[in-house]
Image 1: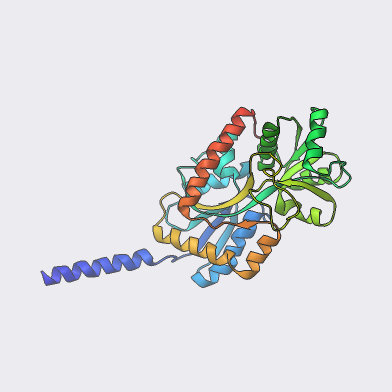
Image 2 (image 1 turned 45 degrees about the horizontal axis):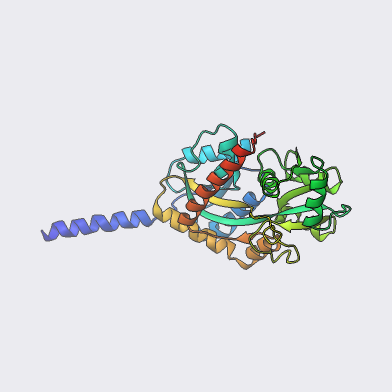
Length: 317
């Protein structure tokens, strides 16, 4: 009897130590977009700050295409062993599944790790524009229906969806002009080819600081510390908020220890003073939610944007 208890305890101890042994090989973080964007920045920051402490490499794998859904499908099909993760913006998590055929279930096949950062949208116009505030802009739109043009990074992009929500809430209309990415959309507004643009604060901040773009309003719940002079939509009587955001996820069913440790690594990386300063100076808000909070948020966003896409008859590229 004593020997049996001893053997049972020994087996349990070995099993526990094996369960805790993570990682034992390199980890891959899949990024659905090209190098240089926010998703890529976050992945490489984790790779740099956490890889050394883990004793194993963290490989950043940029897998682009189909609004991030190719990468998401790859991650969803990967072994749930705690060695494949994804960091991405909202498209493959909550919007792309409503705009195109995808080969994964965004809610069931991906396991949320953390909502890492978010960025409010800023409504900007060229500095040569006569519109100096939101009231001016809406008054002009109502007096000139169908004339106001809005650029976006593409059909179904977060800036396009924010513009559609803005038109719905203000009972105005606009001409949507999609571009192939955020950079050409911003360039079009800078050049006066398009009247306005809703774009993430980190993407337009350099042009606001240089005086080439004028911010009219921001879509966050409270004013941004990066642009404290810019009022929120809700302050101006437009009752909604909108953010682009970045989330970490894995295949569904990874070991709890791998999920916990990855969350710790994310937290340590984003609380690194240099990284924290770099992100907040761009206007990004560090969230670092729990897996449970991210799961609830994802489901809420999934339903919210589904309704907007369907009621506004939005079709993806």
